[in-house]
Amino acid sequence: MLNRRPKPLPPAGRAVVITGASTGLGKECALRLEERGFRVFATVRERQDGEKLRAEASSARLQPVLMDVTDEKSIQAAAAEVARSVDEQGVWAVVNNAGSCVAAPLECVPPEGLRRQLDINVVGSLAVTQAFLPQLRRTRGRVVNISSGVGSVAIPYLGAYATGQFAKEAMSDALRRELRPFGISVSVVRPGAIATPIWDKVRETGEDILNQAPDAMADLYRAPFEQFLQMNEQRAQSSGTQPQDVARTVFRVLTTPRPRTRYSVGPDARTAGVLSRLLPDTALDRGLGTVTKNRR
Image (cartoon, rainbow, N blue to C red; front, side, top):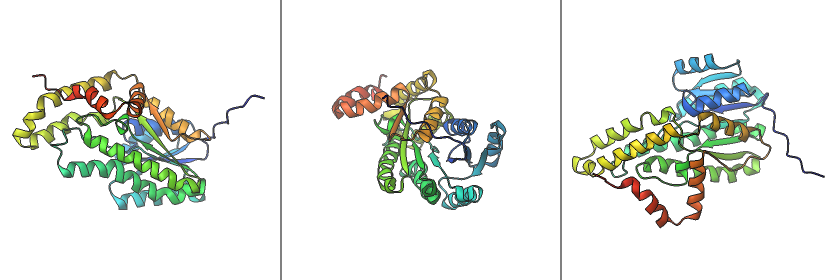
């Protein structure tokens, strides 16, 4: 007798919270999950962004919620709003997508810049998860943390961003093991290079950081950092991976009976995961050393 794959779980009647849904991956995930039948609470920081998102939705199943992942009062207010809406139903899943990217040589990154990076990408994800755990316990639901291929291999000039993504991966592992007795799963989704609005400000942010650093320090990095920015922009624009690919993966995580712990989206993300396991650090250092070479 052939073993049959278990049937996917039905989306209908299941509530999902997605952070950072005003643009990019969060927006794509919110619209796709709503279209496929989930009831979606899409968090945004600005009311007008929520109105635009609602206008693009195919039904009233999508409900924008105001929330700033760095503001504890805002998170608690959003959790209370969702709790009132779902009543005893509870929340099936929380998708921690909200994030930012600080790209600059680590020597030049001010401590406050790193704190802000971690506050948004790591602390904010944990704070949101904590706020919704009482509702997730009712459904024995799921947490999905959107990380990155940089969460397995730290690329030069993305050190601050990689620090946050490595931390998010470790946090996900600990949460998964702690929440397992309650029947709550925790999965990481690692997208590779994708042209989304998060990268639009990478150049601006990086150049601002260099401009604020002492000239003698900044001059050491300007030429190779510019080469990195150009390479990074080209990779994102030429990538065959699209936001829809990430949205489809998140949908799969939320509907499969037995979700995996990690999902890589895109060939570069998959390659990064394999190389991080197989190659020694010295080999990775040599391979990534071309990024930091000054070819003036």
